[in-house]
Every structure is written in structure tokens, then in C-alpha cells.
Length: 184
Image 1: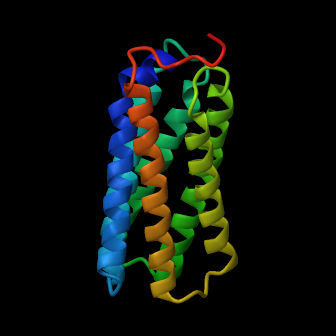
Image 2 (image 1 turned 180 degrees about the horizontal axis):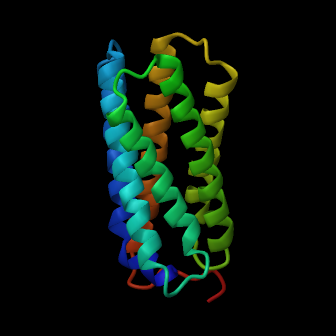
Image 3 (image 1 turned 90 degrees about the vertical axis):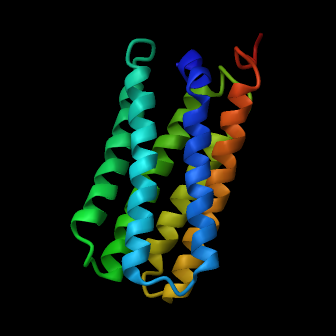
């Protein structure tokens, strides 16, 4: 798994760049209509899902738990496709899709970070991004009546923080041909 993460460091960085772009767009255009938010969200989670799917499939021969990354990819792709197939979705339904996607993605990323803590340094970034995902999802579930602007800004802030952490982790893995082992 570690060699594949190192080899596909750019997928983590790509996930991060997509998240940062999505987050910046949410702040630059806070008056986004629901239709544009649906398209932006759908594009982001689809790209994120494809990146996770590729990573999961590439890990299948070297990691017995590759299925978690594959599952995260399938969830992301499904959430992305659903937003494109049903563009007339209501704000509350989109809010819950985002919330449940964030919680599931976060839980899977925390699980991956726990598995990697013995293999690499910097796994905290993946764990922290997972915690941030879970917190966003829970906040959206608990406070669904929040104003549209507040929701857009929460999602934008989350996307920028998550993206920055993914970019950091991707370049940390790229930094050496073999990532630093904690117990080396």
C-alpha cells in the first residue's frame, strides 16, 4: 500500500487541488444558485471518487484492505452521478447528500490514517482531513436549517482545508522515492 501511495502521490494532490478550487469558488461566488452548487459539488465528488477508485484498484495486489479505498471511490462517484442525474434536487436533499458523503468519507480516511500510522510520517494530515470531513457532515446534519450562504461558506472552508491537507500529504509522499518510515 505504501509504495502505491508513493507512486500515486499525484492523485492525493489532484484531490486536494480539486477541493481547493471548489472551496475558492464557493467563497468567490457566494450567491451561487443551487444548480451551480449541484454541478460544482457533483464534479468535485466525482473527481475525488475516481481518484479513490484508481488508488483502491491499484492497491488490490499489495493491500488486503484496498476495498475501503475502493468503497470510498464508489461512494464519491455515486454521489457525483446522483447530483448530475437529478439536478433539480432540493437544497435540503443536497445538504444531506453532502453531509452523509462527508461523514462516510471522513470515517474511511481516519481508518486509513490509523492503518498508515506505523508506515509513514504525516499520516496525521489524512486523519485530520477525515475528522474535518466528519465534523462538517455532522454540522450539516444537526443544523440543516442554516442559511444558504452559511452552508456555502462552511462547505467552501471545509473544501479548502481538506484540499490543503491532501496537497500536503501528496507532496509529502512525493518528497522521497520511498516515504520515510517511522520505525526505520
